[in-house]
Length: 69
Image 1 (cartoon, one colour):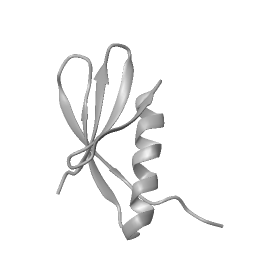
Image 2: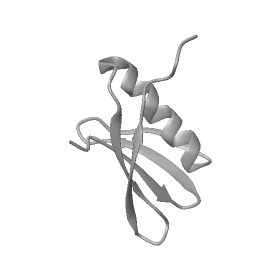
Image 3: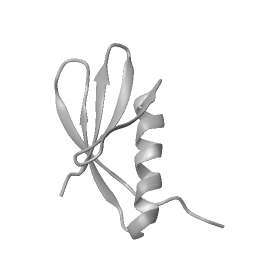
């Protein structure tokens, strides 16, 4: 169910795919989550993303595909 993770590492945020590995490096968690939302376009469904902060605590976020107007 969780194939994407956003992980804090050395002052940056990594977007990691379970199968593909590291997909990108971002300055903020929000930027990494926005990038994770881009993957939701592929299946047009919200994606569940695990987030690990610098303290090692985990939480979950749900990101949807970008809205096209």
